[in-house]
Amino acid sequence: MKNLQNKNYIENISKPTYTKILENGKINKLKNINHEYRENNKKQILLHSCCGPCSTSVIENLMKNYNVTVFFYNPNIVNEKEYERRKKAQIEVLNWFNFTDKYEGVVNFVDSSYDPFEFVSKAKKLSEEKEGGKRCTLCFDVRLSKTAEIARINKFDIFTTTLTVSPHKDYNTICSVAKDYAIKYSLPFLDENFKKKDGFKRSIDISKEIGIYRQNFCGCTYSVWDKDKNLGGTNGEVNSTKKLHTSN
Ligand code: SF4
Image 1: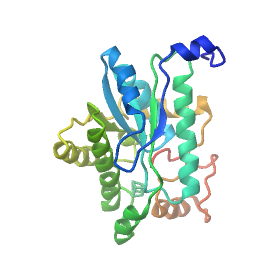
Image 2: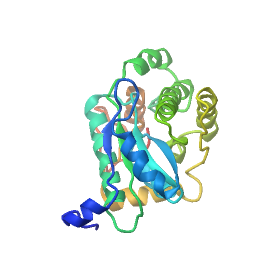
Image 3: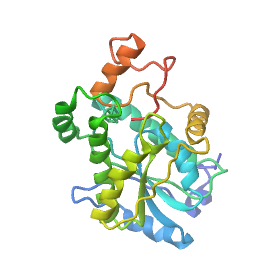
């Protein structure tokens, strides 16, 4: 592990930034991020992350070619307790990348407040949809439109999402939604299918190594119901011994 107790070390590394979006869409302290990381000539990518486990192999992949800032924006998550639990896992992932010697560079973290109302008001009309149907397309739309907007406001070079690492999610649907916002905001979308080349398997392996919480339902209230039907449970509580979903 990198020695965080070493004062010289702390002063000399480019420190990761863990911060929030301001009300005007600006990312707090982004000036510093740009100043420090443009020096290595890698492009700045804003990576929408659905959860810590899915982000693991995607971050590992992207760090080779980009300065990565993770954007945790998931208003689809069923309640604040679950949101905080997933956010905590996300931060544990970033700590692992930032403070483990084998990875060069740092990964920044940007959080947004938990604000499910817009998603819930639209999704309830689609409550009968199966996972993978129109409600999920809406869910991608809500998250990727915000990601593209925030990337544009804060002058990122490109944006992408962890959603394509999941075998439960349709790559073409995700890309189609993202590309609409790439056009709207005049910003490239990195349309990589992160589940390829064993990306999903690698995400499970890294998650186990870190020892983070991995959910067993997608995220919204409807996916809790589906999970309960499939697993014979009733209370929506996540149990790591059951079948794991690892994506929202
Ligand atoms: S099942 Fe997952 S992707 Fe679909 S709407 Fe719910 S949280 Fe979103």
